[in-house]
Structure formats: C-alpha cells, structure tokens
Image (cartoon, rainbow, N blue to C red; front, side):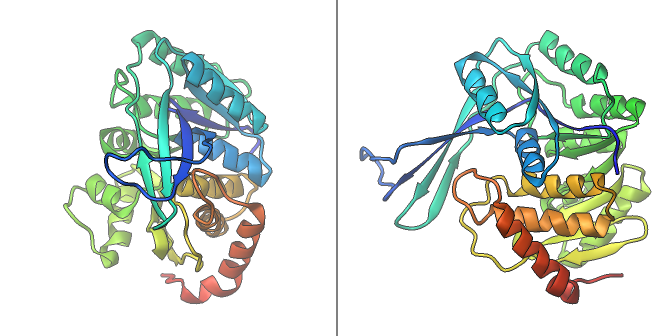
Length: 320
C-alpha cells in the first residue's frame, strides 16, 4: 500500500453549469431548468472520485475571481483536501445542456484564460514543497494559454525527484512532451495513441503493439487505452489484456475518463494488481456514464459493475 498521499493537479479548471431544456431550437428563447453547478476539470474530478472511493487525495488547482471561489467551495464541500493557487484571471465557466426530447447532450467548453509566468512558477513551487511527498501525482486536463507545452514534462521531473509515480491524462503536444520525459502510466484513447506513435490511424488489432512501443521507448511503464463502450486495453512489458465494458445504458460521458483514472490509481494505492486496478477503473468509468450532467459515479453502481467484470468480464477478455 502506498505511503504518501495521492495528489491531483488541475491548472485549467472550470465551474461546470448543467441544465436541461425540452428542445433546442435556433433563434428561440429556450426555457431551461434550474442549473446545477459542479467543480470541473480533470484533476478535480479525479480527486472527487478517489474521495468517493474512500481515499484522501489532495487536489491542487488554480482559482480566480468569483467563479474560482465558488469552484473552490464546491470542492471543499465534497470533503476533498485542497491546495489552491490564485490567478489574476477568473476561472472559466463551462455549460452542459441536456435536450430532454432527444436525450442528446450539448457540451460547451470555454477557453481557459491566460496564466502569468509567476502563476505557473507558483504551481511548480507548490508541488516541489509538498510534505509529505506524494506517492502518486495525477495531472489531468488541458493547459491554458500562457503555460508552455512542456509543463507536464517539468512536473514529471519533480515527481521523479520525489519518488512519486506520475500519471498524465491530457492530449496534444502537452501529452507528447510529458511522455517523452517518462511517465508511470498513460491513459490515451485510440486517437491520442495514434498521435503518440506517429501514425494517422490505428486499427484495433494494432493497439497493443502501438502501446508496447511507447513502453519500449521508455516513455511510460503502463498504458491503459480507453476505448469507450469497448472497455480498455491494459498493456505493460509483460501483459496485454482487454477489459470489456459492462453493459450499461449511458446518459452522459462527462467525467467517465477521470473516474476511470481514479479507479485505477486508488486501487493501485491499496496494493492491488494492475489487472484489478484496470477492472476497477472500467467499473468506475462505466458507472459515471449512468448519471446525467457532470455527476460522477454512484458507489452502488460501481460495486455491481465490478462484480460483473470479476465474474463475467474475464470470459471476454483477451489475455496474451
């Protein structure tokens, strides 16, 4: 079992506003339901999910203006320990709308506001000064303007110096830069995996070889390729295993990837195997899709789906 805390990092968080409308019609004034507000951002979602699983993570994130203060209060209300870095610019606000007549969900993500170099430095110093030293650092989410593409690569070096296992859930140049610095675990989807190995497209039967190529290059130790309704593929130097997704009726995919990461890392922190961890991750991610808006999973749903994976999922897994 890991001794140090699990730390999550979110430098481009958002105050998520969710509502519902009967039908979306251009030009019309749309009467929405009373909105719900939640603290959003990859690392924040991971921290909330780990806390829901029974862990005690530390969520590090930026806040700015009234939206940032409201976001901070929402995270604290979840019972999650927080460390915040204040920014001059206000925290962004995202909008999620469910069209009740069709079941379609519309997600409007606003751009992050520019971060000052001094604010970026404050984040790095906060991580360097952590005491006790973390056992895992999970960086999740996009980088706002003003943050260099190699930011996660810089965090990788800090994690290595602290003896922490570093996990990145991002995309684009920031993900590539981080993987070049060496990570413990990567959780790309197939498109992101294609970009990391430098090909336009990967077929399903090429996923395991592509993931293993990253491991051989020393870019990471573990790759968990998330494949939505098809589950996930766990790849290490010695393991290739397909973990199928349990059959569920999805309502919203918001937070599913973050829930998956939380399930994996929380389980590893309990001293469990990678196979057990990825099954838990798939159960958490699938359970998150059963809720509306940006809600995370319900623990009862996680228990039922994990039981399905443990009893039936093994029959459908492809182990090499």
